[in-house]
Structures are given as C-alpha cells and as structure tokens.
Image (cartoon, rainbow, N blue to C red; front, side):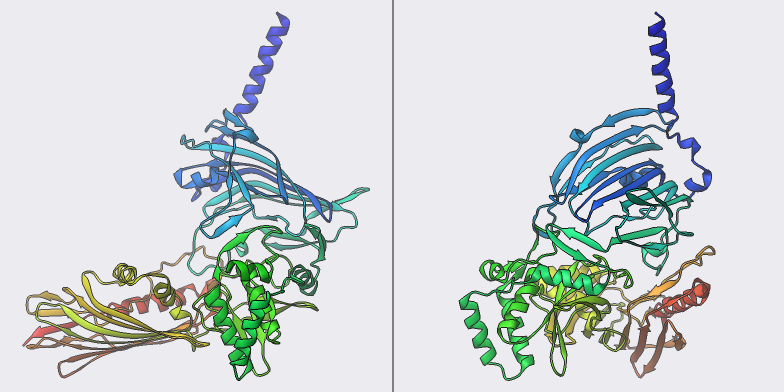
Length: 630
C-alpha cells in the first residue's frame, strides 16, 4: 500500500513538473507584444570530432501565440549520406504547460527533397507538425544528426523571423584542442565564453530577452538586424576530399581540385568546336559562337547529387545528355573553350539576394558562372540561360563579388556592374481622350540592362496568349483593352527590349459636370506613402539604381480648355532625383517625367528626408489636370 501511495505521488509530481514546463503566462509581456511566436528555450550544440565527422544536436521549444505563428510549429530536418538523423523527439504542450502528446523519430514523415527546380536530388527531409490550434501552445523538439563532413557548419540565429521574440538561446561549439575554428559575429556583446579541458575547446554564445522586430522598408540584410554567429573551419574533409578554407585562395584550390579532369569532350564535339572556331575571325567571336552552341544544345536542369552539389558532372555527361545544372553547364562551357584554345575561369557566386561576408571565407555560394578574360576585354557567361547574350549577367549575379577559381586558388572579383546608366527605361506615349473620357494610346518603351530582365524573361518563357494575360494583370489601369502588342529584342552585352502596345482605356478621364479630370502620368506611377517609425534604428539600404524617362502627348477633346495644371516638380537628392512637368500646346497635353534612383546606405536619422522624397514623388505622379468646357 505504501508503495502504491509513493508511486501515485511520484506520478503526480511528474505531472506537476510537466504542467509547469512552458506555461504561456510565464512569458514576459515585453516578449509577447508584436510577436507571433516566442522561442522559450534553445540549445544548439555542434561537436567536431575530426576534420571529417561531427555531431549536431538542436533542442528548442517555441510557444505559438496566434495563427500567424503556426509556421514556426513545423519541424523539418534535411539529411543525405553526409548528414544522418540519429533521433527525433517532440512534445506538445497547452497554454498551461500541460503535456498533451509526445512523438519519436518513427512518427515523422519522410519525403524526397526534390522541388520544382531540381530534377534529381539525393537529399531527403523528415518533418512533423502537431496541427494544434489551441492558442497559445508550445512545441518542443530535439534532433540529433551525425555529420560525415565539416565543409558546411551550422550558424546560429536565435531569431528565425520577424515578429519572433526569444526568451533564451545558447550556441555551443566543441572542437579538438588543435582544431582551427573561425567565427564571425553580428549583434553580440563581447566574445564567446571559452573553456578548455584535456582534449577539446568549448565556445559558448548565449542571449536572452530578444524583443521581436517588424518589417521595415529598405532594411539591411536580416543577419545585420539580429544576433547572428557564423562559424567555419580551417582544415576540413568533404566526401573524401580534403581542403582548407582559411583564405579564399585556399578555398579556391579545393574547388579547383573538385573540378580537375572533368573537362574531357567526345571526339564529335571536339570536331564541332574546331569547325566553330575556324569560322570565327576574332577570339570574342569564337567565344560568342561557342556560347550559342552551348545554348542551342543544352538546357538547365538542377541535379543535386553527390558532394553537396559542389562538384560538376563531367563534360562528357552534359554532351551525352544535353542538360546539366549550373556547375555542369559552366564546366562544359569551360571545356568547349579549352578545346578551342581559349582559357576561362569557373566562378562561384551568390545569386539572388546578396549579403556576402567578404572577410569570412566559407561556403556562401549557390550558383556557378564562367569568366573569359580576353586580351582587351572580359566576357562573363551565364551558362544556364538559353537566351542571355554573351557578356550579360543580369540583376541576379551582377553588382557583386564572386570567387574566381584558378589553379592557383580562389580570388574575389567583381561581376559586371549595372548602375544608373545601364538600367534605363524610356517610354513614349501618344494618345487621344474622347468626349466620354476614353483614352486610346500607342506606347513605345525601351527597357535596357536590369530593367529588361523581367520583360525578357516574360517573352522568352511565355506564349503570346500568356504574355497578354500577364500584361492585363500587371498594367495598373482600371478598365482597358490591349488591341495589339509586340516585343523586339536587341541582344548585346547590354541588352534591350522594345515594347509596342496599343491600348484602349475606358473612362480614363473623369467627367464631372463641365469639367474633365486627367492624370497625365498614365503608366509610371511611383513613390510610396511611408510612415515614420520613431523606433527605427537600422540603416536604409538602396541597392538598385535606375533611370526612367517618360514623355507623353495626349490630344484633349474639342471644346475644352485648361482650368488647372500641376506645378512643375524638381527634386535632386542623394537618394535620387525626380522631375515632372505638364504643359499644353494647342489641343495637346504634354507630360514629361524623369525619375532616377541611386544606390547607397543611409542612417536611420535621415528617415524624414527619405520619406519626404518618396511621398513627393507619390503625390506628383498622381496630380491631375483639370479641363473645363468653354
């Protein structure tokens, strides 16, 4: 009997402990304000055993406050032959901290990591969700993986997203005593705590009470706004390949060795290369012709197999199959040029959003391109594109630093720059407004540089019917009909696209009694209605430069004269410039507009000036002309 009582009391005590584990009421009010989720506790531990093996353990608990935080309740972990999941444990708690459910590894779903981009991918994912809706609730997970490489290492970012606060988070890294570990910190006070025993060194970072923050216009990269620690090795091993990334030069030597002897071409392809080279009179023409051969005979397909997606397939594979990913196609183009006697360099680059840490050699790349240094010029080649002209990179890979690979190692270089002179748009409109306020207009626009990227992608990737549908969805007019449209491409190192539109806009002008109201700016309304944030601390970052010019001539209906015209607006700031004017010449309403944007980084203290600049543009772009019947 005494044993039974003791057992019951023990069970009750355990239940009480479980009930008190993550009560939502214990969260400080400062952490719930403006938050969708609160990270209650987290320990991320990474232990390096040797240059080729490590153990990764991640334990965390997150309280979900509302349905906008539900996405943080998902557990997912990727694995492959380099990362083996040893165990997964999970638990669900209600608002009081009462344990509702537990799960083990076998309860997780398992699927391939193949996505819409990749044809083949040897990565897999284990994932789980309790799908609980009793807010607030808490999920707790612990996952342990064994790593068979140290090329990639985990980073620590306690705040995973906007509108998330953190009660407590710890990052622990354990390495052998003689192991060279590098780290780079953002928004962390002081240095990590360090401890040493007979066999290893331990580094510990810890934060608590991190308040949520919101989305802000033109904010810096996410890692600059919250606590972030990135670690990297000196010596490492990756699927049997040994390397060093102490410097970019060392990192590049490793990549060069991965690519070595993967440039052998079949005899028929060699013969074709000889024919193409013989038909060209200059080195540049040889490069352009071989690039067209690549574009006409291969296509891009993502294949993420083998060594973390870092080693390209052999040139013979691409030649036989007719496809490859960015690495394989860049290596194939390298091989074609080598056969023609033209040296080139394989280049790793961070495509898309750019936030590279240039002073921290590590795997920060997601794309490969090719650089061809000629005697008088350098040609950059985007080998995954079947439409880009030789020499043009575009917004995704231009204006950034990249790692150029040679036998001597890696070197950071600048990809082509596209600024205010290159990224231009010039639009000319001729139109007539009838007595019922309908506008019939013809539009001729020339997009250049990065300004033509989206337009070019549209016409290259869509049928004519789909292009029309896209135009109908994106042109910012209320009721209109596209009578005709046409696009002409000018392919060069700085490509252009010419757009021709014939559009009827119903009720563009508003008729009220004897008056006719017209917004002279028809298609290029810009600016923003920003509100000042008194607690903004981060810089404004503008990383895209452009220049737009519009000139329009609209014939007004007979019997009307001008009652009011908008005043000319002229702005010239370090953020950009703006000019607009409206004049009347006989029965013609003539509108001119020039808008330019400069890149740069500006302190939060200039918020007022920046807001005024955009608001004045917003107001000027929507100003109306008032006509009155004679």
